[in-house]
Image (cartoon, rainbow, N blue to C red; front, side):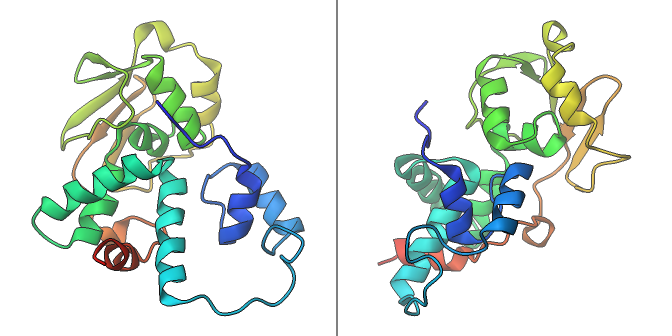
Length: 205
């Protein structure tokens, strides 16, 4: 599957937010809390409405690790669903299997979660799953395969979680390395700082 392979440090500096979740980018933002490039510290013009809309779309794409064609496919699906398109889009992206694996704490980043899913380290409802874009449904069970239970990367990632998950739509059982997707999260439960309406306005032109 195609994925972004560019310099992620420049991306987090552009948005001023560690959208990838890797602690090393927090250190980069502390040292260089301005945009990338030779004019990063200089004053810039206020972006146009189109610029703001494009920036918000790029932020969502990079956060969830999608390329343009993949992102547009999710948008079209969200558009056909009942309810607000922007909220539907964020909820769909949160329900991707690689994102759920990341949210459950089995991986430190979404990129790492995507690699683990690609290599069939997880079962969904008892069946092997290797499609990162698989849309998880309420009550789906995501479990680490028996052959993968000793993977250091998974256990090191789980050590970061103290007590229960602070995500009401997910349940984690560390003893059995099993997570459950309880329900589709409400928009106010998703802490990602998106203004998804700007993305809707961009695609509505």
